[in-house]
Length: 276
Image: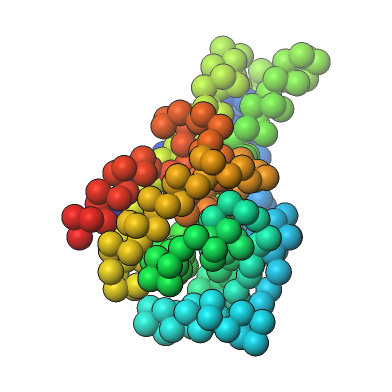
């Protein structure tokens, strides 16, 4: 069900991009939008993991440097039938974790120093299982594509705005001025909402998959309870564009509404795990 929902939302996001391009510049605008999105996707596919790891100053660790964490990731990776990802530690007090990488063969799992302090071994295994489920489901690629298409839509809206200010639009290209105005307002909001809905859908699937990899849904449920409370007390210097990657929203303490959240309601995530 989550896979079907994600596919439907991705189609919807692509249609918003096509509509935005057509509204801005007719057939040529639609073509430009698709090319722009393709180029952004190619760049993100190859470089987004390196960018986000550098952004959070993540340090790669070896088995000698972090034996317990490394052996935990290795054991769960083998259980999931995945290649061994690179293991990173982020020096942040907020307990959190994320996975990145363009495919299972080039994946990385990153955890904060805060998460290793407050979780038990079993709870941390649940979190690692969740992140490996993201790798298994190729959610990093899905999230990257969704983010870049949403970014292309926002870029088109800005282009349309400046074109109208400076009179650069040519209506002979087939663009509709009224449709362009509606697009400037509606398209970026629609893209953001769809992108966030995709992220929420993939979190549910990763919770379920992670519980199966780790072997006990209750351990992940207990971990999420601790992480949710801690994320509201302990601030984290995080970029909104990367918030969807973390197991719990690092910005949840800033009053984000549920509609604009990159994560499902924590109560619902915990309830689903406990029902397993």
